[in-house]
Amino acid sequence: MSRIKEVLAAVAARGRKALIPYICAGDPYPALTVPLMHALVDAGSDVVELGVPFSDPMADGPVIQRASERALRHGVSLAGVLDMVVEFRATDERTPVVLMGYANPLEHMGVDVFAARAKAAGVDGVLVVDYPPEECAAFAASMRGNGLDPIFLLAPTSTEARIDAVARVASGYIYYVSLKGVTGSATLDVSEVARRIPQIKARVSVPVGVGFGIRDGASAKAIAAVADAVVIGSRIIQEIETSAPGSEVENVRRFMSGIRAAMDQAGA
Image (tube, rainbow, N blue to C red; front, side, top):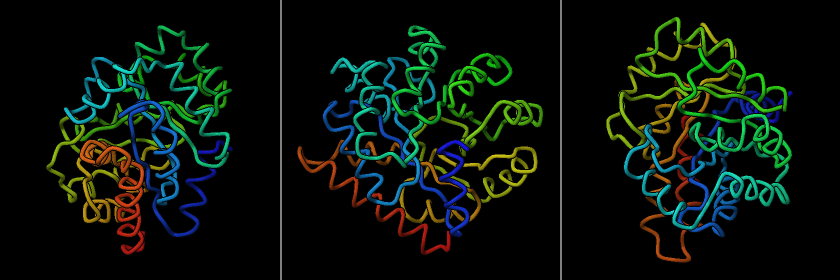
């Protein structure tokens, strides 16, 4: 059983929903990434999504684009991100880490080389935004061959055929994009999410997390009522951006503790 599957099953067995935060590796500077990861866990997060900075993050809105730009200015590379995971694993062997990013850095390193290095570093899953499920059977096989969960996106526009294609290759969990737009969008239609999630869960065998548009305790609580996991990213980046130097870790810990508390108050 993968670390992701084990942790999500344990969360569900306790009658809770998983909290999955996203931060961009290297933002606002590399030395802060691992302390931020630990703060997320301390605040009650169950899985950590760690973004691999990329110069053309097509699915990301301006907030995460700025995070990538800051990280790239510090020279953060895919190899550097793996080194951060190694550092995190020195004191946390339990929390699953998912790398989220784009195909170019993986292709540059070599998919099989990346898979082996990611497994050695302690990565548990990989979500590549621009790998469509219909065209990446070899990628998924390489990840699973190294004990990594290939994670895929679904969207409000996903057809039954696309859902079935994702079901064939995905493991760990599925990330449902709640909006027809980029990360950080403000309009979240919980009723539409509630309508779509059962349709997806009827066709897949892994948990479904929902992200995009979740900005506070109220929206996290609402999504936790209908999904297996809540994914939150842009709002955390904004917390980092607006924090005074030196206060980023504590502010992120405080913000995410509030998100966790709101989800738990919902009976999630």
